Length: 200
Image (tube, rainbow, N blue to C red):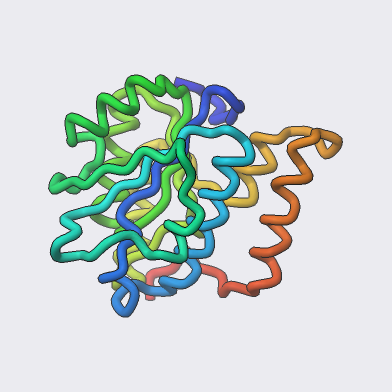
């Protein structure tokens, strides 16, 4: 596992957890989560980063938000699951092993259930896990806050979508910047509210 939590292209994958339509009216600041997920989906295509997208019991929770799926591309690996932890699903685990990343960037819903359990399982299995604090939420703000506290104490890396994208590109003169900079600017223009690390 990467001791310093450094991200490197070619050794990193994205894991999107259960951003499904049932949460639309339930999750705290849901539109922000969809915005981050859409940006990461587009970035995965531009940067050639493997990405897995999961759905928890879609019969009950409905499908992934169409604002995200409209950016799906041919390399997106899609899985449905019943286990809260994506890593406990045999097919998802096998796909992650096939990709063989050193680092996994994790975001989605809900922070204190599927995201948390997936993150801890990945950490236990020696992956370098980066959880996007602007890309996770829960129905209740204190559940989100408590989940982040537990993840931080467990040794997971807490980061933001903008931070990980710039770290992957590394160089302002990189030709990849022409793909990433417009995505970051677009998110800034949306003026999404900050998701605080708080107990309220």
